[in-house]
Image: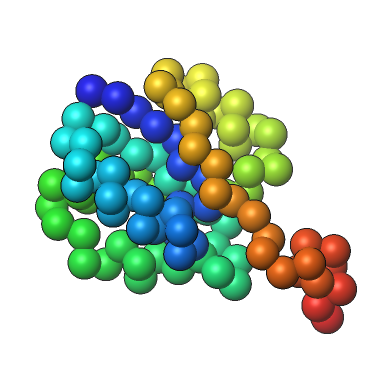
Amino acid sequence: MKIFLITGGAGFIGTNFIRHVLTIRPDWHIVNVDSLTYSGNLSNFKDFSEDYKKRHAFVHGDIRDTALLENLFSHEKFDGVIHFAAESHVEHAAGLDG
């Protein structure tokens, strides 16, 4: 069994990557960390099969939260980290959106 941490896994690219990996790698388990801002959506996982649900864990959190990441890494030995978390609009990342 392999365990991977996916950041930004509730966005469009992350969701599709997770679906693909769970389909082609039955020995992979995914821990998905996403802050669920404007682009992340938990409804992307509502149709997951029971097998996918067993191999996918969602953690609501921000990757800038050092304590959260230290906690995750202290409880799990990840085989890798795949990073999709990003603010895709400059105005969101810069705090200029309102």
